[in-house]
Image (tube, rainbow, N blue to C red; front, side, top):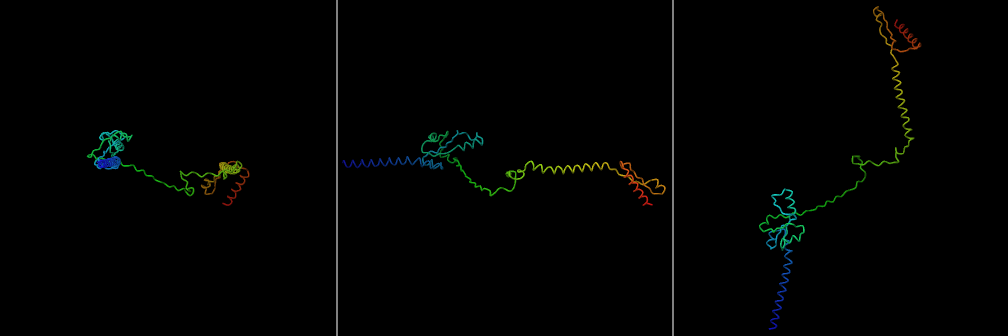
Length: 235
């Protein structure tokens, strides 16, 4: 009898240990299993988990929101599949201010947020082989060499270069002014046909010295000599 009771007690203890181990494994596996069912609302509800809609802002009627406010409300909305109550998410997620339980009939309206993908673009810049030959608006001017001309010239060099040029310009200006003055002093001698000789059938000419200006005696004698030679040649 004692052996029988000991056997029964051993069987009961083994069964209790197995039940406790099974319960522990079930309670540990269930939350993990529920979290993995977040992408499917139907599977979450069928498995016995709660499908929760959470948001970091208060829920408002979409008909009363503008396009910008509606987009912000959708961006703040997320979903979770948990084994416990959706109310626990207020403690598990500090940013959560709104939650509700999604029924199986509402699973068709669930739209999971699209994860943001960050794209990194790597740009490789090759250094130019040398300075650009073209001079544009954005190209800096080359640095001037202080040891090159005209930085090495002093006051003596500039004076020696400028004096001959000034003298040449002054000479040309003086010659031009003198020629203008001489041209104003000169007068022409007008020679016309004598009308009296033409009427009598002869030939004659009139010499007008009124605009010739002052004449020297030598000039008057030279003019008379030229007139005499002209008359002799005409005869």
